[in-house]
Length: 230
Length: 168
Image 1: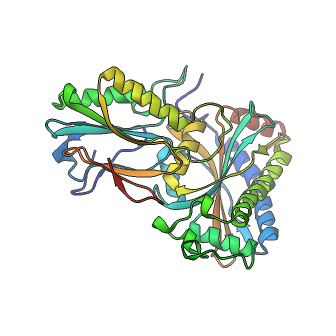
Image 2: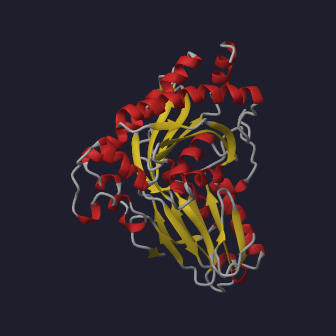
Image 3: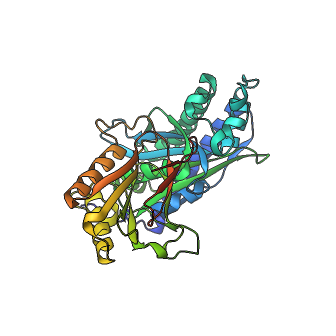
């Protein structure tokens, strides 16, 4: 039977999730550093339960413009859901990421000039306004980050964690989060999330990796961790 | 419900807020609405009373306890209409406006209608069963929305990141 709240986790379970996620975060940091040539570090992940409507505040607030790459995570088939990964950047950071990924990328006409697409307010580009190269640069980054993160998690748990193809959206944080959290948590009041910040040495490129475990299959993951003495 | 003078009263996820117009002089607001649906109901004849629900899901899931009726379309609409009538709203004069129900990511791995579409349909059905006419809708698409609704005039102002503000 479903409950109104996610499964209650004890301190050891939270710690086990944190340790597994830390391995994922370290791997993701390495992958993005190699990809961009920047020295990107990931923070220690924090594992916590938040009220569903508190989640957008992590990304700057309900109306903050966010560039987000989303991937569903399964154990290998859609009938075996494990959760969601959302990689979120402020628009100016997405611009910097693209500058690092595609040096000398073509700068479009004025409304879509280098940073204009990522400016706040009405100048913000839709994913369809981005060039093919920019769009695939962002999606590929999402892909690589999620794969690096989940490979480490799979190694630790000996369970499969497979990301779907990534999807890109540029919109208000509240709107991006409401669907993910509501659909995944099926109307529960709070959501468990594993939150990792990434930042480069200059502090100019920062991003957030949010892993939202599926409450229905989280007990299997915890069981696997227990069996592995974590 | 605590409104600072002039500022809109925020209606959070799963909340149902009904009040007299003079209790929300800045209107009722939801910021950053994605697949959720804002249901604004107002008394067209008096302009004195109205309210808003911030619906998350089309229906409660089987086996799930009904912790907060405001989350689900049928129970949220029923609660909203009840509260408005208790505050003196006249059922025949109630009108509804719907905003939201977008699909934020292009593909969700699920067949059939999106969560946003299912939310909109469920709210329309709930309003029909309460006998309340829909006076305006700004629903669907793939963009997030913010809105402020005015009880006295029944006007709803909608903003998105990439579109001009518009009124319903």
